[in-house]
Length: 430
Ligand code: AMP
Image (cartoon, rainbow, N blue to C red; front, side, top):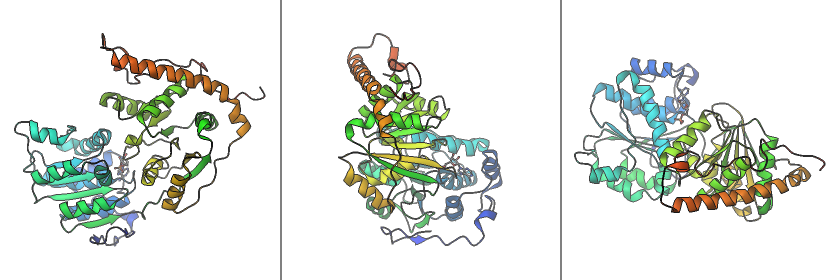
């Protein structure tokens, strides 16, 4: 357990007295029917954050959980809530706030999986304030639990006003759980507003990245980013990739570029409709696509278990986002790689990341002459991608006759393999 520098007002949870390995969900105080549900999900023993948070939550304490993504934090708050719901069943028992709909959907799936045998229902209604203001008969006056997942993000994304509005209409006499992998000073402000004598549960030191994660950087001129990306995808072929871009437009463009070169790439960003975003995510989860290109909408919380390699194609501007992005790989004891592209414009941001994680990263080895052999085909694919992006933009402006491409999850990505006609191979000795 590590003390956070930014929080000193909370009591820290005591170290568990019994060896962690020997603990079961039943030992933590979880009721039998929920222990069975855990068993059915293959959760044979509780994770560290669950061991720390569940007993305290069951005692009725407010909790600040500081845990890495993939640590089992959803279970850490869902189990105590379901446990309490079984004791006093009622409608609108708990409210979970998340920064993105995908995350809300994923959490709701875990609630339903854990609560299936007791008939729990969950919903992900989108913007809660709209419902509070416009849906007749909808109120949260009987609410017993409030959870904020990725709490720092909720505030960083300027949800502060909305959160204040919600806090005003829910009972003061409730339990509050606040979970995040990273905490900011803004969260500290919120703690004072919303939590009562909270206890802090932290299972890893601040901003630590997991041991099985191999992290590299690549210092390259900005104009060769696409070519180096293609080189890496070829070099590490057979793996699943998440590639992070800084804007929706660049995510879409890079997805088009890669598809034109024969890669099975799919985008996920905030300008896609909700159903398309979920569609992309599900195709990637089902391994029907091996490359997911995403903005930071996907850097947090989403449970995508099989990512082997994270590529920071555009360096994150907030260094904490680095931790969240690379947290998509090397999960649950598996190993993984993260490669960060650093151009002439990104040196300072990269130094900040190294400072945050407290280590100097090695260079990812490349054969520059082999990379340069790819330039011609990449340039051609870039040209096609630009055309397709333009066509898609114009199509969107026109009134829609029939649903056409817009109903396709992959949106503008209708044209494939124009350049390579299949998976792209390095051609040597041309
Ligand atoms: P989370 O950190 O909540 O996103 O959880 C990450 C993944 O861990 C999810 O796929 C959960 O189903 C899984 N998980 C949560 N708790 C346990 C547990 N005790 N044992 C095994 N897997 C778990």
